[in-house]
Image (cartoon, rainbow, N blue to C red; front, top):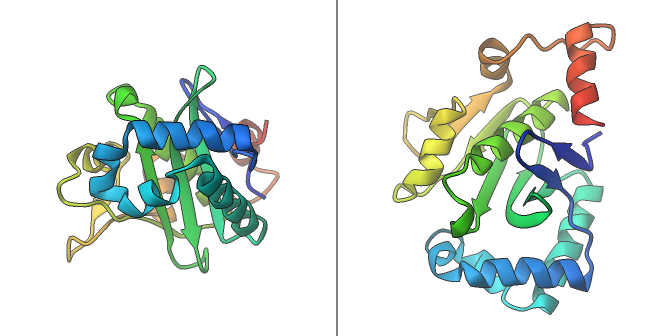
Length: 192
């Protein structure tokens, strides 16, 4: 139902298999960026502290993915791991939460924007109705990404959101019928 890999213009979203090699690379990227990540994702910095801990997290992510409760992707640019984007949901008909981060050295290149746009395309194509981004008020970079991607701030300012209807109206006509040429083309691009 969800693509194993999504190729964008400058990045690739890919599932990381739970191997020690992948866990070491991810743990290294998180540790390199621990100071800045700690302010927003302290739980993640603790969970990815060692390759062994990171391996356990990757195994858990794979289990949740198989149960279709989570869609974890890692962001690659020219074969280099640069960040992560993950969607989690209880019921895709209601709300899906997306979180993302990049290594500080990779910020400012549009990778987070492209990753979020790629993720939302996959989610809305699969029938998710609303995506929410819970962004800390001090995280202006992520707020900018949300704005560039057309997310709206909720009335109580707790989160940014985009609905499937907003996506259809602002991006493209999306048809759920396999016979619709636009829908088939979107599916081909996602699942190649």
